[in-house]
Length: 157
Image 1 (cartoon, rainbow, N blue to C red):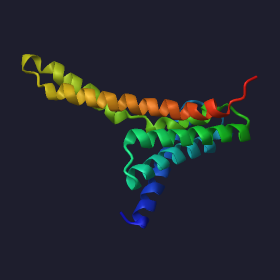
Image 2 (image 1 turned 30 degrees about the vertical axis):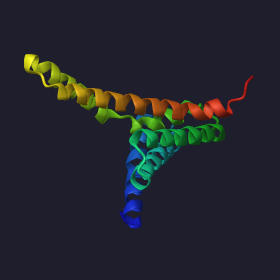
Image 3 (image 1 turned 180 degrees about the vertical axis):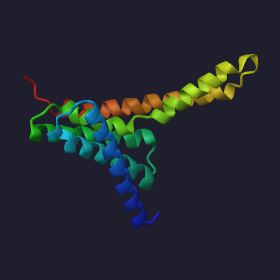
């Protein structure tokens, strides 16, 4: 992939991820003055994830961890600068990284397995386990990434 193609991919990725974050921020009734920060967090986190997966060969789980950590740090900085709660930026920022396709694949494979009756093919069950484990690992990476800045920089009172 050429540099121009990579930049175009990253710009598209940032635009659509920022738009998704912005949509969820509106859905969650985030104050209008904070909406650009929510879009920025979503765009930056997903763009970092895509960059790592496209250029360095990171797995989706590892790239999601780095992307969610980016959202966590950026959300913490924006929250301090704009004097607002950190979860406003971090929760809406990681929404585009939620592994919906893997969770959907898990459910479809389980339904296919149970609908097979006595002639059920165990391949659906193996695929369901694979998709479920990927979903769990990605969700765990998101949780750790969001929590990391708070654990590192929160002052005890």
